[in-house]
Image 1: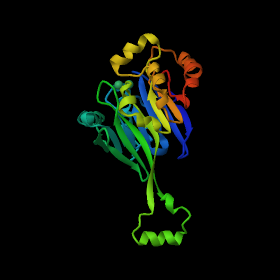
Image 2: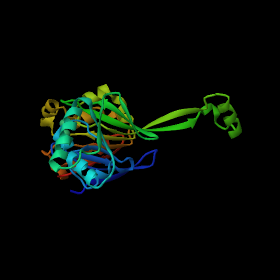
Image 3: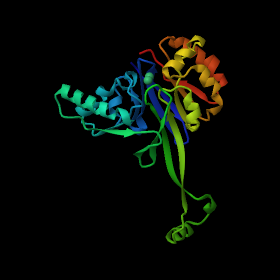
Image 4: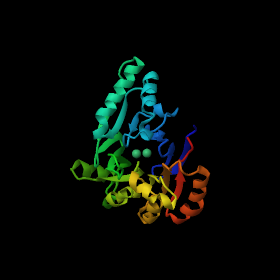
Length: 282
Ligand SMILES: [Zn+2]
Ligand SMILES: [Zn+2]
């Protein structure tokens, strides 16, 4: 399977978002510039080079590639890896990793499993961190926001000579402020409750959002399984302050060609942002 590759312009620069997704069959999103995978529903050749793996929840279409990631990192001596996952599933993930390394007959994998929860943070790089939020699925599920942090001169000091800035800093004056830019939000599996509980995530420059159902008769199915229907998306389109919306997780009930037709002609013209997708036939 060839993953789909998007290159999306943001204030940080061009962000590569590579992945593939279908409900039930597998969702995997790679951000190679941040060595970060957002779920690993399937094995993919580029997956092991991601040193951090965020697992939104324990459903197999989101963790099916976990063993491949762990084993290939170990085999290739790619160094320690980190899994970020909702706290309640951490013990099962540790047991699973130990079982898999036992089966392989090797040493335990060099992987730290870190439990995270709604409102928590994880530093990814010096100036980039992840912030976690609860979504509206039927098992404990987290989404995450990628936040770029910069230090900037306070606006009232703009135009001040450098010598003066140094003097002020030496005198103990706070000359800098922190600017936070939410670059990307990954909303994982979710029902429409997310639009109410965390509307702020839709202000990220790139939003990765599931949209599992499209046919009018499937609205009940969406409610039952904690997923989004395209009607939910359109009803909340005014919350989308992102530049790029990337759709994921469409049900296998719909043919890819039909979905692409619908996205281009019916959905994109009614959205306030650019529309993309990572939908595939696995
Ligand atoms: Zn799923
Ligand atoms: Zn799920």
